[in-house]
Image 1 (cartoon, rainbow, N blue to C red):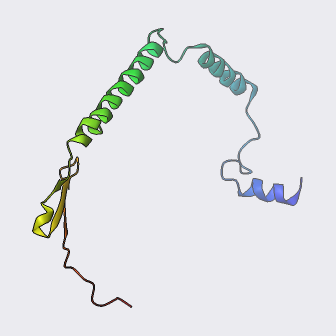
Image 2: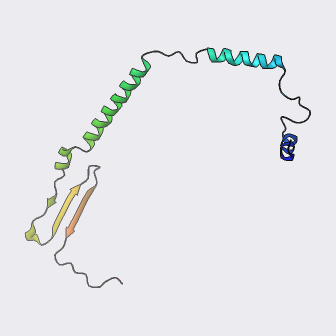
Length: 120
């Protein structure tokens, strides 16, 4: 054995010098029987309808999400957001609209507005 292997074995709390090397043949046979018994048993009882139900649930969820998204971003709603422009004869013009979330935006265009100084 190399010196590194000896150092690792000496420092191992689970496999120190007081512990015997390996399992007895009776312990190994008992462990093997337990593993083979566990491997032979089925973990889960599978039924043939789980997979079709999962596929149907995914399809239903996709349809519901499509309908909700379609209603939220429908073209009819976009057409109802018509801008309102005031009379140009008054001098000032306004552009008003509201977003689908309900926020109203109003822009006022003043023809007499002038920028007198510039920002450096």
